[in-house]
Structure formats: C-alpha cells, structure tokens
Amino acid sequence: MKFKHFLTVAGMALVLALPFAALANEGGAALKHAEVNTADRDQINRGLTVFTEVCMGCHSAKYVTYKSLIDYPEIGLTREAVDELRGDKPITSGLISDLSPEDATVSYGKVPPDLSLIVNARRGGANYVYSILTGFEKDPDGKIPDGTFNEYFPGHRIAMPDPLGWLDHDEADTAVLEAQAKDVAAFLTFIGDPHQNERHAIGKYVMIFLILLTIVLYLLKKEVWKDIKH
Amino acid sequence: MLEKMMKTKLFGWIDERTGAEAILKSQLTEYQVPKNLNYMWNFGSLALLVLVLQILTGIFLAMYYKPSAALTMGGYTVAFDSVERIMRDVNFGWLIRYMHAVGASAFFVVVYMHIGRGLYYGSYKGPRELLWIIGVVILLIMQGAAFFGYLLPWGQMSFWGATVITNLFGALPVIGGFLQEVLRGGFAVGDPTLNRFFSLHYLFPLLLAAIVGGHVHALHVVHSNNPTGLDVHEGKSTIPFHPYYTIKDAFGVGVFLLFYCYVVFFNPQMGGYFIEVDNYVPADNLQTPPHIAPVWYLTPWYTILRSFESKLLGVVAMGASLAILFLLPFLDRSKVRSARYRPVYKQMVYLFFITVIVLGYCGHSAPTPTLKLIGQIATTYYFAFFLLLPFVHKFEKTKPLPEEI
Image (cartoon, rainbow over all chains, first blue to last red; front, side):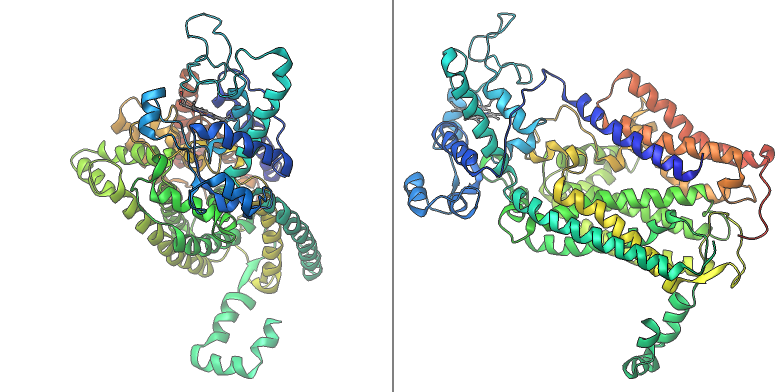
C-alpha cells in the first residue's frame, strides 16, 4: 500500500466514522424532523409571532434586539410594527420576557433558558425544539403526571408547561400546532446565527473564485515544472 | 518577477543597507530543494499560512472580546456576550470569528499531516534531529494556545474543559497544588483564570512565530528530506525553491483554502467537532455537563490520560506520550530514513497513525467499558511504537536503496 493510498483510506474512514460518533452521543428517542428554511421570510415572521405571543411569556432572546427586527432582511419589520411590539422598552433592548427569574422559580421551579442560542446549544437543533414542542404525551409508565411528561426531553420530566397545548389538542388542530412548532423552530434557527444566509450567499462566490484560482495555480505549476524530470 | 524586482534601483538602495539580495538568494532563488518532493511536503507552508491567519483574525477579535466572567442577564457573562456581539453586531465579525475557530482545527489538521509526513519519511533523523525537536516544541505551544483559547467564550465546555485539565496539574506530587492554583489564579476556575488565559492566549502565538522562525532557519541549514530519504547531491537532483516550490506551495494553498472556506462558510461548527454544542450554553459552575471532552485535536492525549485508574499515572503517561516525541530521533537507530525501504517500520508507522485516530475517537466519545479497553490497547501500542524502535534495525531487512533520487 502506498502512503498516498493509505491517506485516502484513513481519510475516508474518518469521514465515515464522524457521523456515527455524533449519533452515539445523542441517545434518547429519535427526533422528529422539522422542515425549516431560514431564508423563508414568511416562515421566520410567523415564528417570530409565535415567539412573542407564546414563548416570551416565559423565555427571553436577549441577543435579539428590537432594532434588529427591522435590520435583518429576513425579518424586516417596519418601525411602527416594532414600536407596537416593544411597548415602553427601548428599541435597543433584547426580546426580554416580563417574567422575572424569581417569579419563574416560584412558578416552575426553574428559570426558563434564554432561547437566543437554543438551536445551537442542543444536539438536533431545530428538530429538537420541534420535537419538544410536540412531545407532550401521556407517560407510558404512568409515573410522570400529564403535562410534565415529554417524550424527547432528557429524563422526560420537563418543567415547561405544554406551551402550544399539544397534549389534549383536537385531531383537527394537529396541522396548525405542528406548523406553529415548525415556524418557531425556524425563527430560533435563524436567530441562533442571524448572518447564516448572508454567509451562504457570500460563500458561493468565494468557492467559485477559489476553484478558478486553484485551476490557474495548477496550470501555472505545470508550466513552471514542465522541464523538471522527477 | 523576483529577478526583475531585484534589479530595480529601489531594491539596490535597500540591498546596500540590509543585504536583502543575499538573503533572498540564499533563502529562495538559490536555496536548493530536492526535486522529488511529493504533495505531503506542502503541509509545512500551509501551517505557516494558518498561523498567520490565526494571528491576524485573533488581533481583530481581541479588539471586541472582553475577558470577564462577570454575570449578565440570563446566566451569561460579559465574555460570552462579547463573543455574541462579535457574531451579531460587529461588521463581518461572524466571518472573523468562524475563520479563527475553524482555523484552530485547520491548524491541527495541517500540523498533524506535517508530523505524519516527518514520521513516515524519517525526516526526524540526523542531521534533522534539532529541526524535529523544535517542531515538537511548536506542537506543545500550539496545544497550549488552543487550550487557552477554548476557555475564552466561557461556555460550558470552556469552563469544564479548563476545570478538568487544570485539575490534572493538581495530581502532581509536591508542586501540584501550587501549580494548579497559579494556573487558575485561585482555587477554582473563575474570572482570574479567564484573564490570565486571555493574556497567555495572546502570548503563545508570539512565541510560536519566533520558534517557527527557528524551525525554518534550522530547515534551511540542513535542507529538506525527500520521499526516498536519501542524501541529495546539490545541482543534480535539486532545484531552487523559487520558482518551483513557491508555485507548488501556492497551488497547495489554493486546495487548502477550498476546504477551509467551505467549512467556514457552510459548516463552521462541523457538527460539533470544531465548535462544540455545549459551548453555546453559558458556563455554569454548578452544573457539570453529562459528558466532558476536549476538542478533537486534544482527544488522543485525553484517552491516554483516561486509560489509567490512578490520576497521577494518567497524568504522567500523558506527559510521557508527548515527551517521548522529543526522543524519537535518538530511539530510531536505523540508518535508512524513509519507510519506503523499511518494511517493518512501514507497518509500524501505519499502525501508529491508525492508533492515534483510534485514541482520538475514544477520547471524543462518552466512556464505555469497551471503549476504555480499546483506548488502553491503543495507548499500549502508542508507547510500544517508540520503545520498539531502538531494536527494529537489528532484524529489519531494508530494501535496496536507489543510487540517486
């Protein structure tokens, strides 16, 4: 086996092994898949509405300022809409819940985590958020009381009260609730890394440039080396 | 191009005052390099490129980063907030930060390939012993710099990684407690730790730049090894570095940037390998994450550490696994350099590469009894590789060497 061949094989083995290593870390029930598109303005804006109307009762997203809701092209709210949303909070304020940490501890026994980075901070990302929101079921063992059992939460006992009312919803509402959960997951994915669309867009040009550059350099190298026998 | 430039008046003026022409000639246009180097020899120049990238992006990050563990809203800290500010509000801050974070991993990919090449082709043997030893110093400083840097975002992995590693020093007899306290700037990892790690994270790359200068100088005294490992005769089988290897290295840079930019722009977290998922959770000294693992490039040594029941033994073994690299040039007694002509060494070195990958995998994964056993076997071979080397030449039948490359 030549050294070059060895490297190819080793490289391939490594690339193949990585996803398995990632899987091995996850554990728990397999997550539901959430179709999210962080470039879809409508979906992100619907998600923003779910966030401000439901989740913000308990959660903040402190890294997302009211001003950025105007500035991010993916959201692009008008100044008037933002003024209405923020009430008397300054425009440079983050999306801060009115629930104080003290009150939250009294009511839920825990402070709800800030959601600015939740998609980046959980294995499974958007799928995890979506699964949690649509994971309130009856405990198959009957041990954990209804409304506090979540199929996808580690340990299953969750301090968050079923925010979308998934547990006892009517069959007819399933699609609506699923859509809400997906939309808010899309919004959270977007705010986890708000320059991701810009990054992808610039990245395409960078790659095209580099491919051309590399080809030119290769031809140049061949030209310079043409008289060298080795 | 270079020749033309050297004939200009301005260059003449500078040359009279610096001897620039002699330097350029001896280091580039007349510096002799074997003509048969393969693409494995590109990783040295790539390592230099990544070092420069890391220093440049790092300087800009330091303009916005704030090393303070003071709490802010929601359990975050000033340090964590400043990183998010870079990611969200600073113009192209996201690009600079992802370049730096991905650059850290890229640095190790490139340097590990560079070291692997040196191992395979026997580049560590005389007269290049000191060149190799300086290289090992570079590796150690890189690992230190990366470790200090990983604390700075003050996420869960930053905090607990630093806690676990500084704890190791506490296991050393006599000076352990003192050393641990000096590193942490207190009894536990906290604000003083963050401040000194930031200071050291800025210092270490400066050391690196200086030592890399020494590495390149040492190289230019003893000249490059080559895939045959033979000594080369100047003129017949060598060519000047410039233009031949400048253009070949430039092509290598193009290929490298393709991979690097792909990751930076399309997958900067690399599924939690380059930026770990838990590091998006703010550091919390009351909540230990279920599974603490260093970033991938430190995991092989972490496995060696975990392979021993006694913490002290583990620490000593980990230290020894790095220190033994210094001794490599003196352990290997074979007169033949390249693994091409050394059938036994070739098998050994392949197995060594696989072993390091296995060690890395074990260190990254949550510990299970099977993985622990695999890690212990791999650790055993890691050391066996070095300890067998002094004896291999006694029974190894090397293949006939060619006259000339």
